[in-house]
Image (cartoon, rainbow, N blue to C red):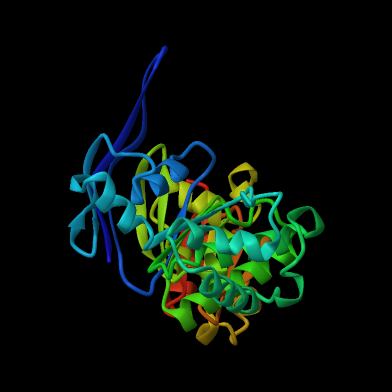
Amino acid sequence: MIELVNVSKHFETTSGTVEAVNNVSLKIDKGDVFGIIGLSGAGKSTLVRCINLLERPTEGQVLFDGVDLCTLSPAQLREQRRKITMIFQSFNLLSQRTALKNVCYPMEISGVPKAKQLEKAKELLEIVGLSDRMNSYPAQLSGGQKQRVAIARALATDPQVLLCDEATSALDPNTTRSILALLKEINEKLGVTVIIITHEMKVVEQICNRVAVLDHGNVVETGLVKDVFLSPKSEIARDLILPKGGAAKNFTGGRIIRLVFDGQASSEPIVANICLECRAAVNIMGADTKDIGGKAFGQILLQLPGDEASAGRIIKYLDSKGCKYEEVNE
């Protein structure tokens, strides 16, 4: 559905050229919930604005259903943008309009008759769970409710793609989970492709099926979320996935390994068996579990004994069991 081909975006400043996005190529299929993750300054927001040409790329192609948006006239581009809507961290609601009138706004601009505007706006507010707050103004709504109104407004033009630029960053954890669940429901029931920009791995793990990891304007890793979690290839992905942001690098002593497992392999007491069968003690430096695509995934950071003989027995045991692991303190 969406394909970025060698997209770059450079900004000229008084101190020189800023390369916000560098030669990025991505393919996002219809029906995906696609995550683009990176730390602050990685170029995430610039990249998502290149998708709907709010930022025109310096180089490259942005293909939407095979059409290069960069080659369209202003009128043609406006027509395509109705199919690619966007929600933001700051909600961007009109303070002097009720929730109902905020949802009506894009339909007003498109010339939809008023009766149809109101009918559709009410339907959308019901979808996002706010049918009882349609006459409330933004100041009377909580952060989560404001974001639900913003989502309903974004759906008013029947888009094929919904761009979410840090849409949950201003929300508390419980509200974040409810908004992500709503986005997933919209994806499944309405068939809207969702692209989520975030700096939080927990957001990607909860909702996305595929992810691209961005670092200093470059895509350093892309793939299924479960594959990136189980076996991150880039340093930035490891930092985002490891407990406490990869604090294992600061541990002293024996080697640190990251042992990962999925729901099918979590029943065997691996750590206890290591101690019993290898006659060696290990330190658990961190552990957590994730629900990715409805399946349990977990990781444990283990500090191996300092003597190589004991550490070698443990590694040999893990290999014999087919366990997935990697060293994280190299």
